[in-house]
Length: 407
Image 1 (cartoon, one colour):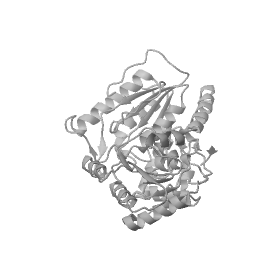
Image 2 (tube, helix red, strand yellow):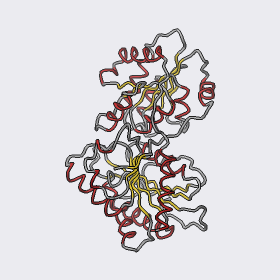
Image 3 (tube, one colour):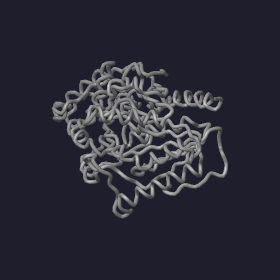
Image 4 (cartoon, helix red, strand yellow):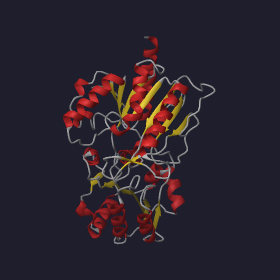
């Protein structure tokens, strides 16, 4: 760790731990933000955590020390220009009003010691309508004096007016926040590369290391047995994160898979992601065979990767960190709409074990050749990366909060 630059909540009857934390996460496209937030919440096992989520329902089990409060869902439109809602729930303005009140009531009721906010103010500007009243309420004494921490990933996406954007972020950080946790290994990617005004931040800035679950010892054998794969066979795992994007990649992988010729048996396990359009999922499932299994989602994805001989995927934060944790050779096709996934993939690729796929590489015959070469090489990459970001976040916050209490 490096130091540097339910829609209607209810009151707890009893404090179950030394510290009460409200962790806010709003996911709008995939599920990476949610799963990274959940992993951090899991680390705070000796404290009471209230995970406030506001995107599409993930229906994921949470540990006993975590209580999830789901705000009415909102999402961004495909162009990321405005908020959208499901019409059967209500209009966007009706949902915004209900969410704003629910979040404020939660703070009045729970009085947390710590408010952790994922991404904002570096992103999720559209959700300031419900967050800023909380920040102002804390600072002006209308709400209990919670400490406020920003929880941020490694890479920021591009902005049209970078000067206005960075000025807004700096003003918000210095006015409302008490610390910034960056979930990255500073030896791999520093925030300075996508944010130029680090020296203007007047609160503590901490690099925690990357956040990811780890496969357990024996997961490889267990998962290969579950899939019916012996030691002499090869397994490819292909995935598309949440699934909103990535259909073209998975379609290409399945077509390429049919062209792979190796002496060993080769199997393919495809994960579409829970948010892929139903027609697209159906199309991929119809391409399945006795050696191709197409599933929407698994809560054991890291274990599945540990069983694989090759991963083919997008290059989102969570997927890349899962690949590093599983130490599996990988091919990644970065999301082209912004720089985030490509920059991350390039840094990891420099360490070996990961190759970046270009659009032309998705031509099935060409992709089959690339996949075959990676399976034949069979080298297990040895990444030297700090992947203990969740534990380091816990350790730093506990020590920091203790100093705050003693002041």
